Image (cartoon, rainbow, N blue to C red; front, side, top):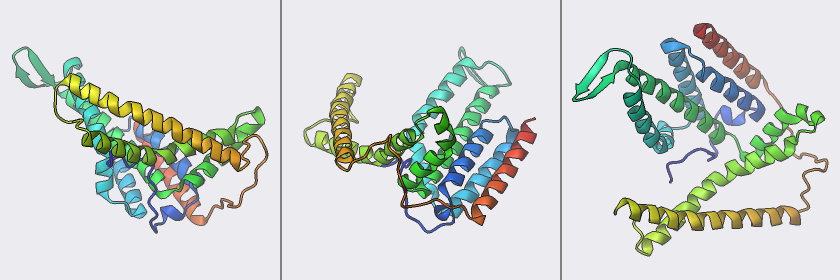
Length: 264
């Protein structure tokens, strides 16, 4: 569970940490759209190099990205298995009995893998370089134009911020429950499928109970401090853009234009 890096803020001294969170979120959304465009090998090579440069500027280690990718290994193996059974196009790579592996199955799996890796790297960079409070302010500012249509921008931003903030907390709570269950003789790694299923159920139930208890305590604390989401609110911290933010948006927009051109 410690391998999950999404939602963990790392207080490092980097260029990205000092940038406006609004511009970082817009840049992340642009990169997400570019990742899903069919830009071919050259396009994904450009995206990979760009994300690695951003990772270097954020001063995050590659080991953190590898740890964040570990929970996705099962999904990648499952996708490889499904593609090998379903896709029947391309050249024949391997034949054993009645089973035949085609090249398109491997290409499709690699295609999905690259997309997932780039998505995880982009979201990890954003959450690791931006404080949860700054994310809340950024989301609220980006959604503020929809307030005139009755859209609850502040409430949505607060919910997203709380969800991101509680990811590391739930991971720590899961580790604590797993250690408590292990001390009582529960083995989550060995045993039959039924025993593993019962062990997982013994982990999920107390985790849900603890999550609901934390949510209730948080709601009581917010009410005790006079928090009313519908009332007008002032800010102590004001977000201000700098020249670096504008340069970042120009570079990301240029990269997006190149990806769109390659996809066409």
